[in-house]
Length: 89
Image 1 (cartoon, rainbow, N blue to C red):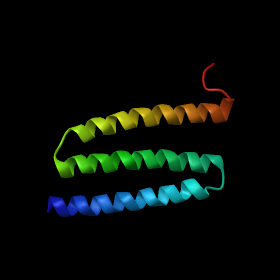
Image 2 (cartoon, helix red, strand yellow):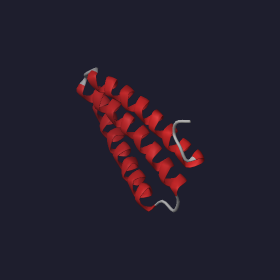
Image 3 (cartoon, rainbow, N blue to C red):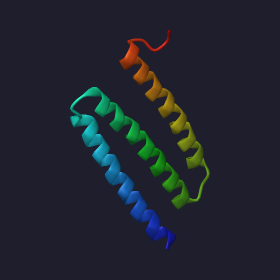
């Protein structure tokens, strides 16, 4: 039962990532593309956690935490650059 749920979840996350890549490439303006990039890294975290559950290893969870931290810092830096024109004051 768990294997079936994991396969369904993995396929849905991959489909969501494909839609995010489409929005990232076609987005009408910069905020839409930034939101697509932010959602893409959240979906990649979900994909890595599901792979960690499927392969039964803890290494993937540490990688997911690292990607979450880097994604947050990256999103904040891009938002500050778009709003103010510089990252560090």
